[in-house]
Amino acid sequence: MAVKFAILISGRGSNMLALADRMAPVKDKAEITLVAADKSCAGLALAKERGIATKLCAYQGRTKSEAEAELAREIEESGADYILLAGFMRVLSASFVNRFEGRILNIHPSLLPKYKGLNTHQRALDAGDTHHGVSVHLVTAGLDEGPLIAQAAINILTGDDEVSLSGRLLPLEHALYGAAVMALIDGSLTRDGNAYHWHKCPHISADLGQLRLPSFRLPS
Image (tube, one colour):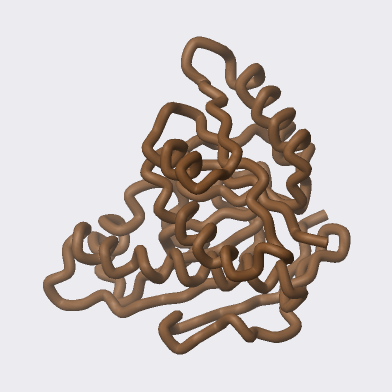
């Protein structure tokens, strides 16, 4: 039986497309059942071009609870087992997160717990950090506070600015998120209730840089 994913986006959809490319060779084992966005964006059009079901769940002009109710309904009707946030620029409410407890993953461009929220590349530069990276984590009610699934880091180079650093980090985002999702698909990363555990790492390659794959349990 295929593992089913709903992907939430807000913009160009680069992480969504990278995930779709990663899953394409295993269509019998993985399916993107829905790509949903909080606003009209390029990523929705790109998903449609690939034949993926899409939904615009606009937040503008209505309350957050109304928008989230539609979003949750669309996800459930799609039959998704997991929700992947891929550049979704909305903070999900506690009620939404609790509705899908343990099933929402996110990719964040920092070495969490450092630099939650926005502008992570410039904040790392301003702090004089020697390393920067990306984190795949479980989504909980707190902003970027969920337990870590995987992290990968790169060196910050002399002369790096926000543009160059973000440009070098983006391929790492795509690779790490794809590796974590593929691990869910083939059982290398398993979920048992509210606990996730790594068992093996067949999708991890040297191009993922300095890597951490913690096993973790949701806080009670």
